[in-house]
Amino acid sequence: MAKILITNDDGIRSKGIKAAIEALQGLGEIYVVAPMSQRSASGRAMTLHRPLRAKHVKLDGAEAAYALDGMPVDCIIFALARFGEFDLVVSGINLGENMSTEITISGTASAAIEAATHGMPSIAISLEVNREKHKFGSGEEIDFETAKFFLRKIAKAVLKKGLPRSVEMLNVNVPYDATEKTQIAFTRLAKRMYQPSIEERIDPKGNPYYWIVGTQCPREVLEPGTDMYAVKVERKVSVSPINIDMTAKIDFNELKKVLKL
Image (cartoon, rainbow, N blue to C red):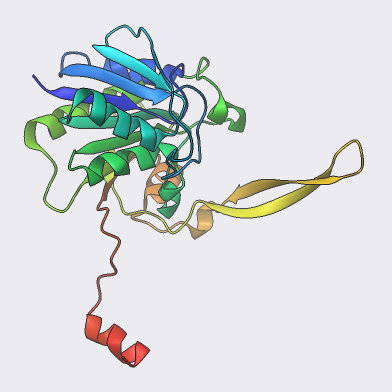
């Protein structure tokens, strides 16, 4: 029987974890290792300068589950050490979309990337939310049924046939208004999702403090064929094949000429 690992960056108590477990029932033995608390935007961060604490928790439908006081990448490493290799790793279902080259910031995508570096096929799946306040909550108000449908459909296919050569991870984004009849678009990553900036505010004592804020790229600049165009404009489920080798595909002689080496 297949072994499946589920993780996320929203925390062990996120409704998205429960939804993922439900979606994958019957496809294999399910194990869960997820952060104890919210770890969004943690990227490929690892905990190297202090010990990790793990707490065994009970989650219906899982063979075993642990909450880890670390990052999503830590969860993958811990799961490998505790349970061995997996036939499939699923990160999500995340509250809020993870698209564009900014997936390197995402804890959800980074957990799947970490799994891919260990040779395990992985899926990062995120559900678009229509209100900003929902992105960092537990998901109690969110309907995950359609995301569950697409996760099961894609996971079942990957377990049966594997991923194509040179594809190591799938990044999946589901529009909040999608139904089971919504089309799937196979996409490349958009250049970026947000234009980040710093907002200065003043605390009650008159001292400045700063928030990193971001404005989403306007629809009119989105390129057809990208994940953002599929979700934001076409309202399709986006599936982006990811290869973790980021080496630029150029003739090295061209680079040699530019650098005069």
